[in-house]
Length: 350
Image (cartoon, rainbow, N blue to C red):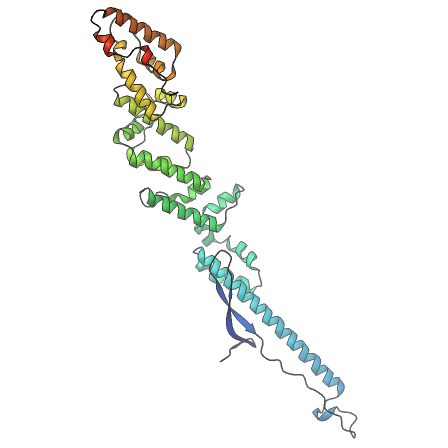
């Protein structure tokens, strides 16, 4: 059975599109049939004061027709207004439900009743405490002149959760940091880079690498992941520290001691982990050049000569090698078992 609201028939629903979401359904408001205006019948020949058998004069009939037309016009306007209100209400409710803000439904209905447009209602809803609690980084980004839609915000949250799962981070490590990450303008691409770096440093890295990170930079092993995901630290700095720790680790594996400054110098020179492994192997093999009497070289000279082809260091190494070659002339045991200067190469340029 058809239903009426405020004199308006509401029989069916109609599907409408919702921006960025699923279809919504709104009532189709149909006005009831209008009451026809009174019509005149042929006038009696014996009565000039009335029109037809209605007993109405022409003036009264015209007035009745005008009133009926005005009633139909008002009814049509009311129908269009209610239809528009319903469409706005259902559209905005569907959209904000996708944001997890179904609790704003009453406010949406209230604003729609006051004939605000969907866009105007959305602007007003963004000022509510509920919205600010749901999207806490929005206000900070707006103050920086950065525009971010709710859909982009939600996509970022999903990316954080996916990275958290993919790399085996503790639950909440990334997803609970979305506000700080967005406020510090860490893009989704940069967040992915940080996650990869953090995974390599805190999960995949051998124990001695993590130990070197602690010794060089004071990073507790349990906090490595959070350290590399910290939005206050620039990615280039994190990459430098991690690469320097790898270089220092390779030195220790070859029995060569190197401090954080020396490791960072080699990292800045372009030395990779593989090159560090080869180069420190050569430095270790020439360790005897740093001992004994006469011409000796320091470990730093061995390192700078090996990796950076430093001219002064290479000359010092050559003098030490010649001194020992002369000392062991005849036996040849040292000369035949140790690499000379000719065996050195720049690990950074291979």
